Length: 240
Image (tube, rainbow, N blue to C red; front, side):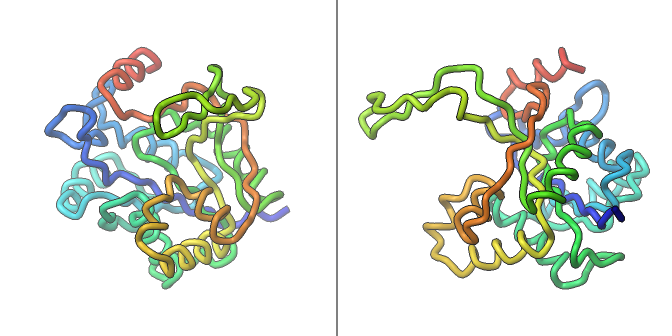
């Protein structure tokens, strides 16, 4: 089977408010390198990923270009673009770049891998696994079974339901889709009201809600953590 073109969208436009830091979390140092370096290095070294769109803050583009992409020689970064106020807006801007033919090499019938730049432990095995599953199911996400019992609460904070733990998964990134599928799903999302848009928490939800397409869960690693708080950073240092 001939491999289709794979474009990574790496999201690095967060503000780092929950890190209690004046520096955006994607630029905090982990093992002597910016947190963002790890995701981009995984993309650069991958046999699966062909190119990359890096989404960052509008005021950070020049810094990211010089101090991260050029400094560390990330040649697969084809475009650096400004993100939106919300995650879904950042993803949409990157998808528009693909849809409008702004990439050096078009990706019209390949796959798009959306990954959080704040998840530093992306592995080649996970990229390979998600590639295999997106080829089969057209939409898939990295995820892990939850270890804790989950309770569904009502608006007053009382437990009203306990889903079977064997059926509950914690979703991560990468989230991977047929190129045209995810573009179409996001285009439909942006035809909806702002209220509906703001309910969206990940890309799989866009595909599920807008197109009613089922999304395959792909077993990932519990080490594929997202850095959100100072505690996460300490855990990442231990994992590193």
